[in-house]
Length: 374
Image (cartoon, rainbow, N blue to C red; front, side, top):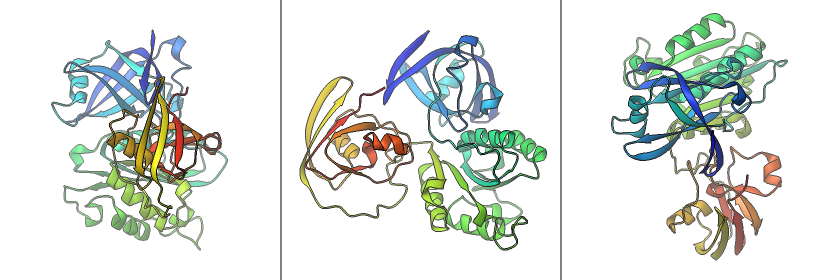
């Protein structure tokens, strides 16, 4: 049985049975789903992607996104899930659903992905905080399995050692691939023997990491390990992503090589807006959504389109408001906009008129958008 559910865009869900459930820490657990043979192709995925899970919680229908911790070659869907509070929806998911129960699970989605390059020598650095380790774990498993020439460095922050999720899995990976994987654990609320590993992962800590860990490169005596970094993966809360993404950029990593996945709604820009735009007042916006047509007038173009439509009470789809999740993807059918940042759309999609409403500034007096597409 499948269902099509509107979640920013129409998303296909299937009923899957819980095959395994495991407690990880005092407030995290994992779920593994049984994939029937006739749905194997539907649940093929790329490292770094997520699925949406629909369930009942306290009389409400909830749809939450959870990243896979499994790698594609493992041929299974495993999720790492954090319970934020005893009254929250995820708490109900933990308490009310067990092995053998069925849940509606979407087909895999998301673009926190990397192109595999098994024949190249690459250096990839990952930064994770708390439950943000989940998609990076999938990435690192996959890279170690498929890219024999790639070396990996993981910097993983948690409040304390008791909150550290997947410690055994990560340490086993480091033992098996010690020549290619190094992992460093940081604690923000637990004193460490070496003060270097105490504190949050932020721009100051990144500078120390570059100078004290990613400095000497055995493969090239004339450069540092940081100089050789090809891709950066960051996953956690918005403030951490913003701090580290900007710090990586200011330390020489191009924005296109800095990839991030957000684990909460975040209303701020990841990178500062560096452009100024001519002021346009009384911007007419016509848009189509769920088969209905709407029209409104924005006071001006000082703020982004999505944010202004939300303030006017229109139920436009969004999740992050930071150009990461793609929920507000739409087609620009008339007018011009400036797409400030884009971690989601491909160049081909942009060329076909796709924009992210949360990152777009109107540049003409009238714009026409279509949020309905497959």
